[in-house]
Amino acid sequence: MLMTTVSACETPKPPATKPASAPAPAVLTKPAPPPVTAAPAVAKPEAQDDVARALTSAAWSELPGWRQDNQAEALPALLASCRVLGNQPAWHDACDAAPSVKGRDAARIFFENHFTPYRVNSPDGAAEGLITGYYEPTLRGSRKPSARNRYPVYGVPDDLLVLDLGELAPELKSTAPRVRLDGRRVVPYYDRPQIESGRAPLRGKEIAWVEDAVELFFLQIQGSGRIALDDGGVMRVGFAEHNGHPYRSIGRVLIERGELPLEQASMQGIKAWARDNPAKLAELLNQNPRYVFFRELAGTAASASGASPPGALGVPLTPQRSIAVDPRYVPLGAPVHIATTRPNTEKPLQRLMLAQDTGGAIRGAVRADFFWGSGDEAAREAGRMKQALRMWVLLPKNFPFQNSTQKQ
Image (tube, rainbow, N blue to C red; front, side):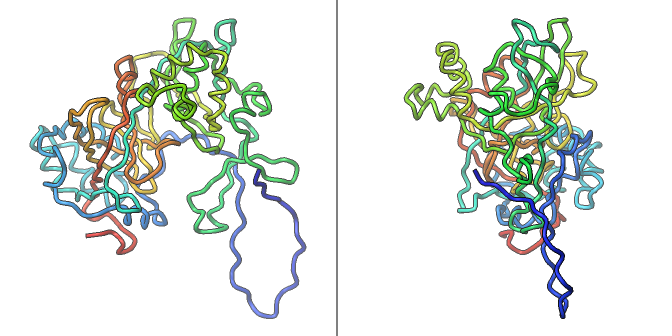
């Protein structure tokens, strides 16, 4: 296991000549409490080069299904993005004009007048990637453990720290390992098997208890959900932190082991396998070292039919109009036109979405996760979705690219 040693050192004598500035030390911080409203979501200046390199200017006629889509259905999601982006100069004009746009044709004209489309490309130049689906699940549980509700939903542990390496080495600016202190050493935070075996100090951090280990596992993948409590109430939970370990697909593990054929390795197929193989379940779940910690979402405990959960942007997601993206390449909050197909069909799914969320498994330029909403139908569609994807991000005409690497 890779370790970093924290140690004191002597103060050197003043040099005869002024030295070059030394890099700042890595910074250890406690995870910040999730904000009510996310930080400005346009790409940070140091990340805008990555955004620019992933994009190629396009014409509106290149967007499949653009004129057939009803962009007015995406306007509420854009207005939600504008609550975060509206105070940024590049977004002023579009966000100021959006509330007065009414009707299908007016919405299309609005986007064409205020935005420029850019095709999103992978670093190797490929324009095709992958889209999957996610949803807001509902689990059965309680605020206290019981014979039925035995599986804890944890809040953020006190010993979880974030190691900021950006000041130490610019190339690590997007790297923030989750770590803990072991004496004078900084070591990676506990992985899933260690957490499940009780090694992490999580006693007292339980915010709820649920009845099904598999449903809890998928709650961590989805990132938010509802817990139908034994007393008749509903508790909503959202992503708070993670343990810093990479995500590994247990569906892929089952395929590699010959336990499931590729066509059955959906969420529904994995749940069916779990029901048939309870003795093997814990070992399978531990193949994914990533672990997610939650927080109770304020103001949502009383009703199961409230607004959708907030995404990484800090605004409620819009079912079938919000996606999760990799913010290294697609600025959070931006409109994104997708061209894909409906789950397990050849029927085109071509529509305008808003990039309002992120995810541990959503890595890469041409990569997205489609938010289907909540309920049984949303669960079915999300669990089956694994389709080819092309995408175009729409950016304001004066979007501040930092260099000239953006392709014309």
